Image (tube, rainbow, N blue to C red):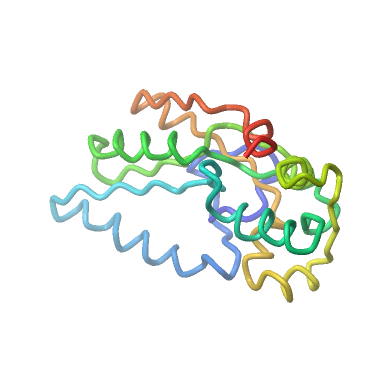
Length: 182
């Protein structure tokens, strides 16, 4: 939702979503507007979810890496991703049930590895250490579809608000090791 963040930002940063998720801006405004009617809307915006050998990293990195012998990496891979483990994210959703109406939380655990570091970790997981193939944004879009634009973003979001307001304590904080061993 935030586009390239130019450093670490929180939920108050301006929104600049890629085309793939641009529809969410109006949707989330409509959801949050329900707070004015006495309802209790809360928005959790997850980062890139990993864990349990599922999600977008499995679908767009590990599976193609196994099939083609090398894990993709959009561009040079120097861009950062904001990650969250699926189990930590589930805990945040539970805590968000008690959040004040109209609250917004970034569901990220303050892990910001580069896309290249993630691709390299996944290459170890598939038994092909270092087998990474760099794709231009056009090649990635052809291969992955519109999600490639999101994978090219440089995003560093903080989940500090959820930790401060809800007492959220992400505990799975070594994404690269977990991805390399999954």
